[in-house]
Image (cartoon, rainbow, N blue to C red):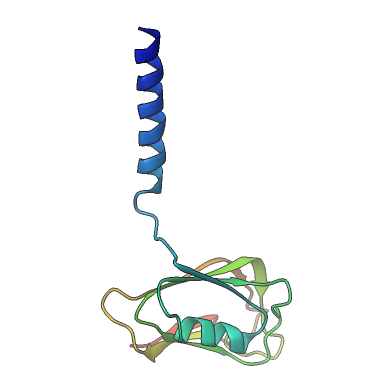
Length: 127
């Protein structure tokens, strides 16, 4: 009887682990970027589903808009909690064009986009 309790417990824990992982995108490729140009390249030229992380060296005050182009894969950009702004009054991000498909996605997460009271948009999407 004691062995049966351990088996049930093990199967229950395994089920929780498997169900917890269900629905999560598996990123086969992960890169960290230091500059806006590296971020643009990492998104546009993703060789497969990719997670891109902004490194500690990534600028938080932008002097130009970061133009991101679609990739045919699922790309996630993790801002690592950074606050991005442009004291030069530039739009922060634009997204569009590229080689996307119906299953392509771009996810921006863990960002704070700060407008600084200027008339520039934080993000524009086309296409």
